[in-house]
Length: 214
Image (cartoon, rainbow, N blue to C red):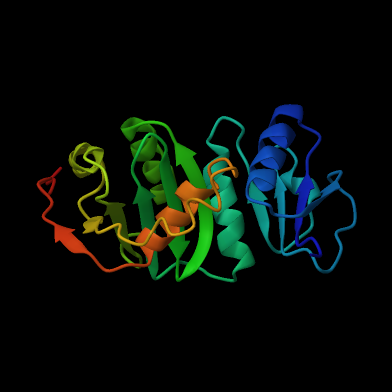
């Protein structure tokens, strides 16, 4: 795949965090020094606040190394998809000893992760939501009900997620069809199950979090 992303920075910390996030998402990229000519196929250039004045491109994404690189990664994916905003974001969660998380935006997979606790799942979803404008994007979190801990997860997410987020309970029958085939591929089966959960209809969980009038 030809690279459509360029990383243009000589700031060590920023470069390390940006590159790690792009690699995590399997997004190909090229390295540039600020001021270099930018190939015509590049759709977005990632740089820093101090170096942006040296970057001549119509789409420059400024990364602050003090912020979470996942947010930057999600912005890169959205830009590459040519979208100003998503209409729908569906987050599937496969609970268990390892929680598989899959993020589907406008029917396209944009992020996955394996989490090791209820809190990690909540933190992950909150990071995903940092790029969401609820005035234009409908967000649903779908949680598989195959193991008892799903109830704890539901209650925790109801407590921490914005009221605009819809929660659904999904039956897990058939979501682990390939579990045996993937048992030696660390973490993959949890992600696959989360993707299947994200694609299924379920029962809407009545949110207990009340609207804030602050």
